[in-house]
Length: 77
Image (cartoon, rainbow, N blue to C red):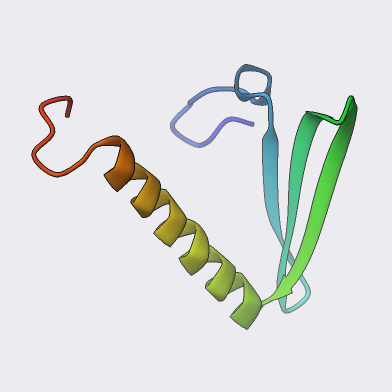
């Protein structure tokens, strides 16, 4: 999967994510090439409220991971 600005492909990452509008909500498909020796696709169908809560949780997790990887004052930035 490549975003509007380019980026890495699903093959390079080893996973894929597809999001599309579905009715009054969104459908998310997360593809993993090897989970227990087999490819797996997880499908989430969320209404607008659930999708917003899910997006907030993902952003919080990404922010936490970034802070742990690059602590405040880190010279690696």
